[in-house]
Image (tube, rainbow, N blue to C red; front, top):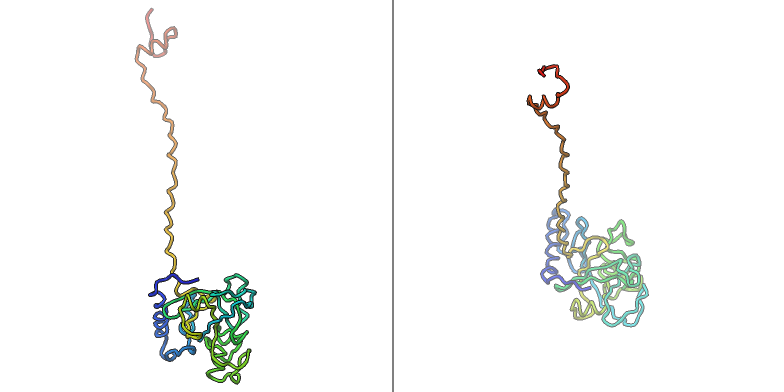
Length: 249
């Protein structure tokens, strides 16, 4: 899917990544990255890592990918050189973000290649298959530039470096690339948060409604005794002489 972010957001990624690199101590900071050789971003927290690598246009319309997808004209998926990150047919378990020339697009991994099948170069040396190579440095790049493995990869002598194949729809329409090879910035989204993803605005939580407190029950107040007048007292005691009064007949 094509990113709908404004162009300035796509252009912001290299700036953010550069500031992150400059924040490192001088002793550990690498030299300015060369296309296809150095990591563009350092993984910070849960942000997915990004590397600058060489990539190629895939083509092969009508062919079948490693997960069974039939390639159509102007298709939208990528191939990476490790079976360990292959999405299911029609699935999005493994996706990458490709950034080129101010444009950026997210695509699933549907095929394995171009040159290798076990090169998980996005992992650190202690985890990747080629443990003698640094993180972000694909084996086919090392074979082409450094003579690694005598210049060979799993699928033969490396004639040109490429660590990602990009389907035609992404290459031509979404990224606007001219030619069949290019330097790309690739973010491996299964490893963390998309650095260009705009975080959702926090949802306002309404305050809890006050709990109605029932009014206190009214306490019955006994009526105060009414003072009897002498007349009332006579009425009450007529026919029965009171001990307090004597009456003449």
